[in-house]
Amino acid sequence: MRRLAIVGLGLIGSSIARGARQYGLADTIVAIDADAGVRDRVRALGLADHVTGDAAEGVAEADLVILCVPVGAVGAVAAAIEGRMKPGSVLSDVGSVKGSVVAAVAPVLSAGVAFVPGHPVAGTEYSGPDSGFSTLFSGRWCILTPPEGTDEAAVATVRRLWEGLGAIVETMTPEHHDLVLAITSHVPHLIAYNIVGTAADLEAVTQSEVIKFSAGGFRDFTRIAASDPTMWRDVFLTNKDAVLEMLGRFNEDLAALARAIRWGDGEALHDLFTRTRAIRRGIVAMGQETAEPDFGRGRPAPAAPRNDP
Ligand code: NAP
Image 1: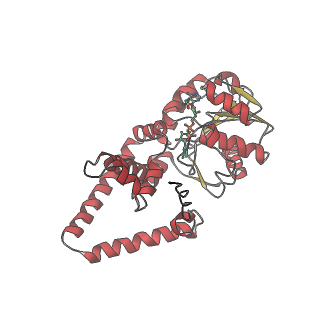
Image 2: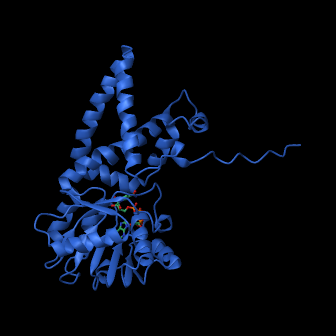
Image 3: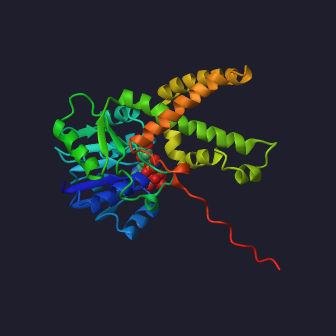
C-alpha cells in the first residue's frame, strides 16, 4: 500500500511499524501518538516517515489506518478522525476485545470508509515504542472480525498487511472472538494478577521469600502479571460478560479440584493433569510454543563471586 497510518506507537503499533518497514509493506508510514515522549522516541528510533500528535491530520491521506491504542481509547480516537479519512480507505485496530470496539467505532465511522477489526494474538509483558520488534507477529495468529457485509477488498487489504508481517489470519465474529479470548487470554491474566497479588499480600510469607523461591511455578505467573495495567484494565471492563461467564466455569472446576484434594481422589487429579499435559503438547505441536524445558530459558547466570575480605 502507499500510506499506512498507525495510531498508538506502543508495543503493538511500533512492532507493526518496524515490520511494515522491514518487509516493505507500505511506501510511507505515518505514526500518530498522543504522548509527546512517545513521539520523540519514535523519531529517535526512525520508526516512521511522519510523526504527529494530531490524529485527524495524520490519517488524512492514508490507505489504511490501524488503531493500536488501549481498547478504552478506541472510541475517542475513532471520533477524532471522523470525516478525516479519504473515501475508499480502510480502518482497522488491534484491540484485545472486539465486541466493544465494533460498538464504539460503528457510530463514528465515516461514509466510504470500511472498518475491519483485528486482533493479533501476540505480545509480551512490555509496553511502549522501545519494546516492539519486527518479528513479533511471525507465525502467530491474527483474528479479523469484519461485520457482515464488509467490503471484501477491505478485508483483503488488512489480511495482506498481517500476512506480510508473518501472521496466520483467521476470521470469526466479534462475539465468538471475545468468548474464545476470555478463556485463552483474559481469565489466565486475571488468575495471574490474582495469584501474584495474593502472594504479595501474604503476611506469613515475607515478600523476599516469595521472590527467592519463585522458580516453583510462581515466576511464570509474574511474567503475565507484569503486563500493562491500562491495557488490561480496559480488557476486563470491555469484555465483562464473557470474562464473568468463563470465570464462573473456572470457579466450579476449582471447587471440584478442591473436593478431589479434600477426599483424596487421586484418580480425578491424575486424570485432569494428564488431559492438561496433552493440551500443552498440542500447543507445542502447532508451533505456538517451544518444546524446550522451562520455555528454553536455561539456567540464569550465576551471581558474581563475592569479593569479601
Ligand atoms: P502500549 O504499549 O501501552 O501502547 C499504547 C500506545 O497508545 C501508547 O503509546 C499510548 O500513549 C498511546 N495512546 C493511548 N491513548 C491514545 C490516544 N487517545 N491517542 C493516541 N495514542 C494513544 O500498548 P500495547 O500493548 O501496544 O497495546 C495496544 C493495543 O493492542 C491494545 O488495544 C491492546 O488490547 C492490543 N493488544 C495488545 C497485546 C499485548 O500483548 N500487549 C497483544 C495484542 C493486542 P501513553 O503511553 O501516553 O498512554
